Image 1 (cartoon, one colour):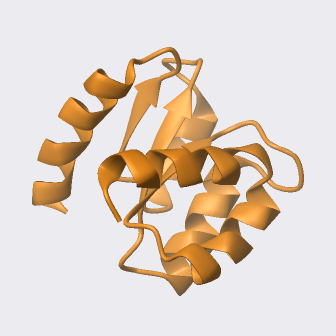
Image 2 (cartoon, rainbow, N blue to C red; image 1 turned 30 degrees about the vertical axis):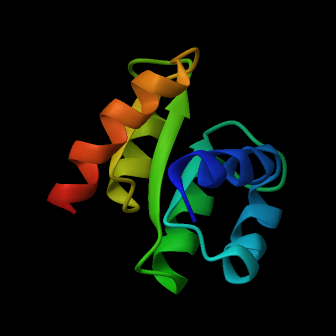
Length: 103
């Protein structure tokens, strides 16, 4: 699956955290773009659940907040990094590639 395809699929995962965890089994993405504020469980909890069950799937947090306890919790749960919402698809791809190599 190409990065662009993964990003489109990840948009589906962003909306509802509980569904995101379940969809990881079906879709087997390389990366999940995780919002922190979602229905069902927050993004840090969803990150923890995904990383616990699917170690090969990386989670990258998208947030509106620079300093937030949930960002810290998500990083501690296994997220590989976080970006502010509003980032362009090109900026996202440029940021993700170097992060992939250090994980």
